[in-house]
Amino acid sequence: MSLIIATIFLIILLGISVLMAVCTIDNFWRTVVVQNAPFVPVPKKIIPHIVNALHINQGSMVYDLGCGDARILAACHAQYPAAFYQGIDVAFLPRFLAWIRLQNIQKPHTITIRKGNFFKEDISDATHIFVYLFPKVMDDLLPKFQKECKKGTRIVSCDFQFKHKDPVETIDLRRSEHALGRRLYVYEM
Ligand SMILES: C[S@@+](CC[C@H](N)C(=O)[O-])C[C@H]1O[C@@H](n2cnc3c(N)ncnc32)[C@H](O)[C@@H]1O
Image (cartoon, rainbow, N blue to C red; front, top):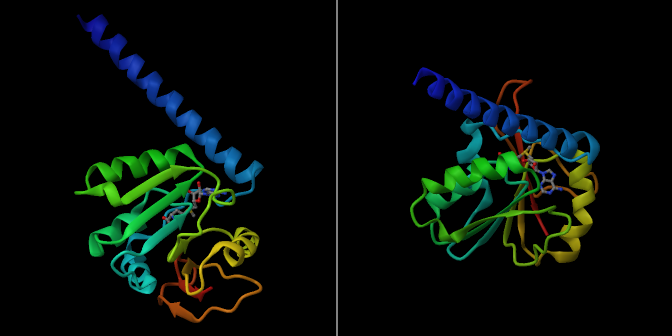
């Protein structure tokens, strides 16, 4: 009996180890090799500020490009359930965590999480976009935003700004110098 339990335990341990190895390699590949922003979620404390900065309305189409574990979309949905939400993420681990999060949300049909590279996805129906990426990725994304986004699309970026576009508003979150999530940059297309 104890041999069976030990075998089951070993199989579970092996499964977890394989999953962790896959996630680590996946994240390493996406960040170091493909040079994308790694999965670093925004600090929970600043989420209400992000939700407020977005100015979501009934019927808004809100994107989180590189949605991570969907914490921003879930927080927005809790406050504005009559809007629509799309998250795109290239990596497996954050999408898996997002899927778990969505299991705890009532009426989650207005939130969609997609696997994909946001550079290649059509975002022309966006009214609001949230990003927490890298400066280089921001600059690479600007031409896409300028080409695809409707006039008036509101973009909120945590910590990183465009080199060649001025924000309409900068929100200082008054956090300590080395903290993540110190400023929000608000743009309008
Ligand atoms: C810094 S995390 C931000 C996560 C989430 N938006 C948040 O604020 O908590 C960046 C996320 O972007 C994803 N990402 C980076 N480059 C991407 C790309 N080209 N296409 C889709 N997702 C990407 C990463 O996998 C990671 O989960």
